[in-house]
Length: 129
Image 1 (cartoon, rainbow, N blue to C red):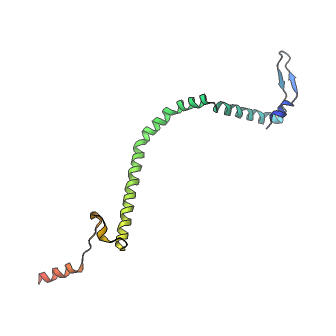
Image 2: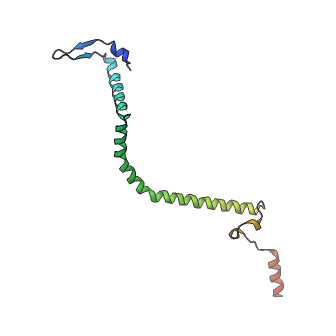
Image 3: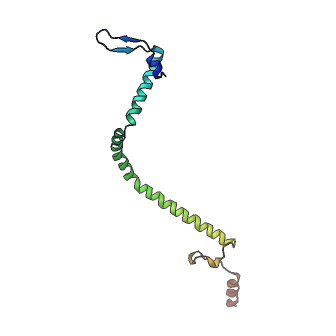
């Protein structure tokens, strides 16, 4: 890549039919110089505010179309994440209550689980006799 000082020190040649002088770039540096100058020009153009606004105006309709097609799926994913979070939380509470870290009486009513007791089986056998 050639810097500005190297370009300034290059020999010049005057075109015979006009008064235009051109720098004579050595063939080995021509391709890299052309590529770098093209990249620099593109970056200069893209860094302008007006160009950024035009690109945003051009891309905005495409983004809106894609988002409008994806909204149902985004909502579905949010609902699934909420359901999975609720299920994980309920399993966690159930496991904690089973190991008596959380007393059963402090659980909300839907989560109070009752297990069959041995007294109910003895009472049924005594009533049948």
